[in-house]
Structure formats: C-alpha cells, structure tokens
Length: 128
Image 1: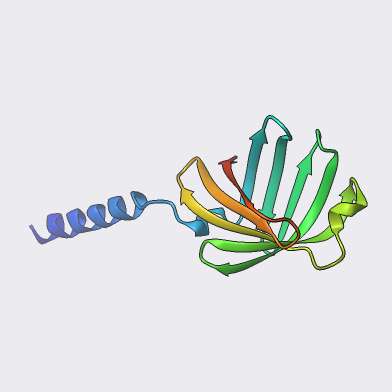
Image 2: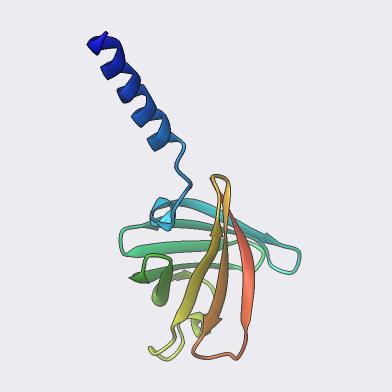
C-alpha cells in the first residue's frame, strides 16, 4: 500500500511539473520568427547574451547584445552588422527595449520601443 501511495505522489508531481504554464525563461534562448506584411519575415536566434536577426526583404543581418533587465524584459544593442545599411548600428547609444506581455507554448507577444523613436509596437513572435 505504501508503495502504491509513493508512486501516486511521484506521478502527480510529474504531471504538475509538465503542466506548468510557459514562462519568459522559456524564450531566453531559441529560434523565433516575426512575420509582418510590410517587413516580411524576421528570423531570430537568441542564445546567451546575443541575438541574431535576419530579414531578407529588408536586407539586413545583424547581431545584438542582449541584456535581461528582469524576468520578462530585455534590451537589445546593435553589436555587429553582417549585412545591411550601416545606419542600423546607430551612433553607439541605440537601445531597443522589449517587454514580453503574453506567452504560450507556440508564441509570445512583445512590446518593442526604442530610445531613438517615439512610440511602441506590439509583435507576435512565433517559436520555432
């Protein structure tokens, strides 16, 4: 009887861990896509403190430094231009602020603003 009870507790624990909702930690690393009619598809690869973004339609490929300021907020700073307009790199002070507002197993929603343009834009980012 004790053995059955112990196995039941273990199975319940495993089921509860597997059923937890996704968190922002789940998107700190990985491959993602943003698709918009105006800009086409942006392919994102984030690993550690770097993020690479490529967009064929807009003609750029750039690496950003990533700094997580809290669980669901991070900043991007241009680090290296691989391809595209050198203006993407800015003057060395450009920061792109990202705040994740919703997250699921397939996607997350992020509000993006910068220190060089007014306003903010919301994107749905698909996980790959």
